Length: 216
Image 1 (tube, one colour):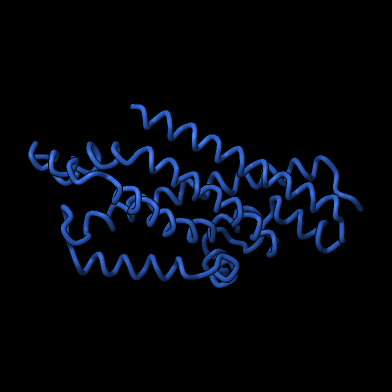
Image 2 (cartoon, helix red, strand yellow; image 1 turned 90 degrees about the vertical axis):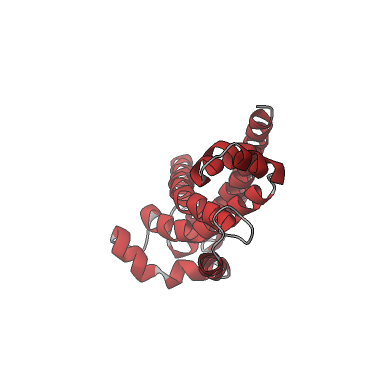
């Protein structure tokens, strides 16, 4: 049986849901972690060698695990959180665990790009650490953060496709179930085109938003 338009539309909607929800929760996890990584570095406003070392090791550990392995390795945790290990909801859990540490590194990288003069100005004005972070660092790094968040979102699209190998739903599941297992080259081509359009659209949107906030 060949795939129909309703199945394709349903798969696209599932992918959008997976990427959107996992991105939002990954930001909630990765943004504070990235800020913590930056401010606890040597010479920064809340220098803490021990805390930085712990965060650095933990984040590097999770980033070292390929998503397809992480997907299978945390199945018990996924079942605990959402009650199942298959479907769209189940795919979101490992996607968050995968993207959170990655976003933390991207946030740290964006903050490292901020000119030292910004921190010096904040210090000269008597800003507290929290004021320095939210009124100086993050606004200055906003354009870079938008670019990096775009990169993270595109990575989540790829992760959502890989989740299809274990019944995660979405475009990836469609490609595996019909394109690969049933040797349906048309469906495989359609899924590839859909993913390309998604990535190109997101990248263009990210570039546009980065230019807009960069002019502020």
